[in-house]
Length: 347
Ligand code: PMV
Image (cartoon, rainbow, N blue to C red; front, side):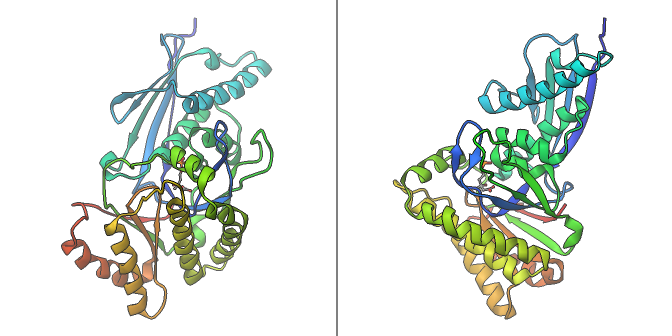
């Protein structure tokens, strides 16, 4: 009998959207109401490292150890990823009788983040991307990153964008089965090597309203949201792709800031309203405005996800200006956590 332990490891980086995903048209398949676009941060700064193994000698159900703690895998999202990957492996095994029957063995997944979980950064994107890529490697699947993004999307929507480095679009697609709702590469990181991200951790605590619940409430109650998905986001996607293509930082920055503001406006227009940004977040917005005014041109752009932490995009040549302006603020202002700044490049 085959008693071997089969094993594969991979890493997946965090991505931060500059045109935000907010709203599901199908909650089960994680199909979005709009396309989105993100920047993948460098692996050395923020990433999940995942090892997947399987063996006929493993007993019991599939399991996941996350940062050393057993984690529940019975949720529909994780189960969907396991199922889809097994189906693909089983197809390979059916076509080639010589292949070991890995699809029939229990899976053991071990996952670690290299950034403190306490940093309060959304880790589900890197987490599901690494989980899917590690099992795909273990199963020796021939699927491209775009094809694997269809699976990662079912774990966490934003995870589909972490299968690629650089500048990544998630095309919403039109099909009911989600087969065209996947990620593709807009430009590799090498296209714009000077891009940097500064992550300002306002709060390490877990977000108040989960993205799934927040999206559901916004879709159900916000009128502004209808305008966002019909006109604001399609325009922002086109402007953002153009800004990236031309390495036009002022345009990249304006669309990033406007899209973050638009997303948080639909949250405020949700009934009852959802507030992810707090007073410290708003101080970060004012600080970025002051930096740009002082510089006489746009050198920094803020963006916020479903929580109060701020990500500031800037270019290497403006590092002294941007970091220098934030340094006194971080030293004196209340609300910023100790060791709360992560300076990342783009992967
Ligand atoms: O992938 P989720 O369900 O965690 O949603 C992510 C939503 C935002 O981070 C607010 C926006 C985005 O596009 O990443």
